[in-house]
Image (tube, rainbow over all chains, first blue to last red; front, side, top):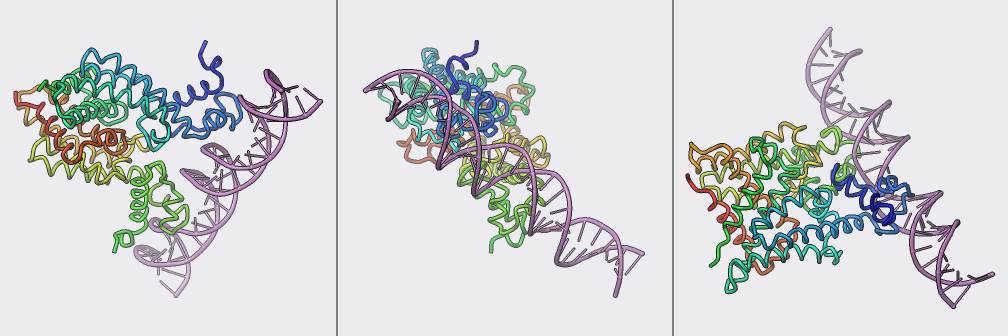
Length: 193
Length: 193
DNA sequence: TATTCATACTTGACAGTGTCTAGTAGAGAA
DNA sequence: TTCTCTACTAGACACTGTCAAGTATGAATA
């Protein structure tokens, strides 16, 4: 039924780790606990991941791949849709997202395959921003707009996930409405020169 | 010379913990390490903080107090200045900031004195937004704008601190210029109705 | 002055952790 | 049969947070 059995221990450990990250945060992920959940010895996961950071790297790569696919798929719908896609990904895959954004757990530079996926997501957004600004726009301008869009999406996502924002704004009935609203505001700051 | 000696062990432990958080992240903070740095037994910090979460709570309260003061001081200068103040606080006090924004380390609800300071910062921003929108604006609208401003500031701050953003945008010569640019964009989305 | 008592610690122990080292069962190739 | 590689297991080590219990010191009280 689940992919855990067919893909072997590696998949089992990854699924267990993501589930723990989603419910209790990445710090609650323990080599011995995931081994226990998979019904193997406490050293078995080391064979597949090297060390604890290796698990975080594997989760990051998988997460950034999904995020990149999600953002790329929304490219044709404009920057607002991309912003929305970012936030919705964070909420839907918070187990992955929480790990991806903690580079004290594993720095992407040490795991090139994960870095490639992160670049895919970033480039999709920047390409779209550049296209809207026009070909003759300065690179600095494109970077500034990209940084802005990324900041809005990332800020809203992290604040919704475990920030004080959601509790404060309890009068905002519909979270999806808030996300759409914010994404629209953000994309309206980019205009063709 | 330093305030550590005069304020006693509590202050010494707090300073050591913040320094560790700034250099190696909050997870590197260990009860036994801070005790070692203060030259006391491994149980001494427990007398002042109860447990590990107590240290995080104390750092959070101190951090939110500083953040609130910084935002309140910039109130008169408008929303762009408040956004800038938020980001500059995060960069200048990243030891505090990293702890404050991790509510898996200690949830603010369990530490009312820290929550009060967080509320101060949030309310300062919302009051300013409300003032600009005008008295007859809907509460939902004010909340949406506040969420937007907060998202931009928080997103940029976290991305600059340990996100992949800074490395991507290496062609952005001046980080302060980027911050000013983003803050101005964000505040321009709020207009009196 | 003697006793009580809270503060601010110290010492010792326990279970849990990541990870190093060494060993083993099994499958496939020579 | 022997060799080698994969995928583990078993044991140990230093480290962690935290519980329990003991101790020194100063102030308040009788």
